[in-house]
Length: 68
Length: 185
Figure (tube, rainbow over the protein chains, first blue to last red):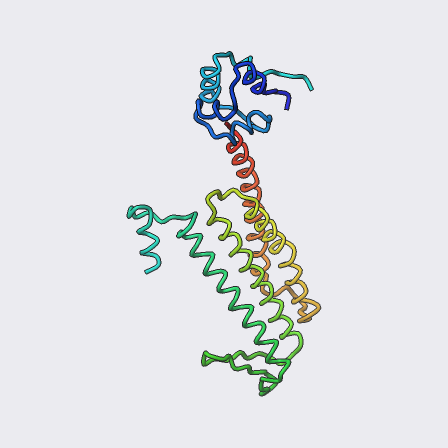
């Protein structure tokens, strides 16, 4: 998939662990893992909003388009 | 009684549950499964009766007493007739077994699953390929008929096969949508 999820980078910058973020945004660790690994087919605006709110960032900081 | 029980499910709101546990699918699974087991037992008994000579012949017709029920099976004592009965019973067993598997898959929480697609594909093959082959075999090499007899059986097989072919593809689409939905975070 040409959409890359940079969640690991943002998490490292904020010194946050996946478990903490999952608790903050109210999704399971398994689902967060699917999102981080790029296996997710889609992301809901509500999830994206919760992530941006929790990490104090913009959607573009998490998602990027990469030409294949 | 069973129907009343099924109707009273869903928190006593009188709506029949179609999928999941304790539903119409569940009931259908048990009915088809038990019927297929009865047919297997019947076919085995027929084979056993012929091998062990537990039958009588009268006026060119064989007579096999069915245990536990006061009944018997009678037909012309010809190899073609016995082979036809055997083939039809085997087809019936396969059909009922596949139908029971389909209803078993409908008992799951998620009905768009791989099991139902696999069994619907098998049902399509059974009705569109195996069924017509058995029909042609019975009509010509086995019974030596000169014209097409019982053509309605063949038409029903093709209609049933076409329905299961379309259902297979509907469930394939459903499975794709389900997978995408499951992977939407």
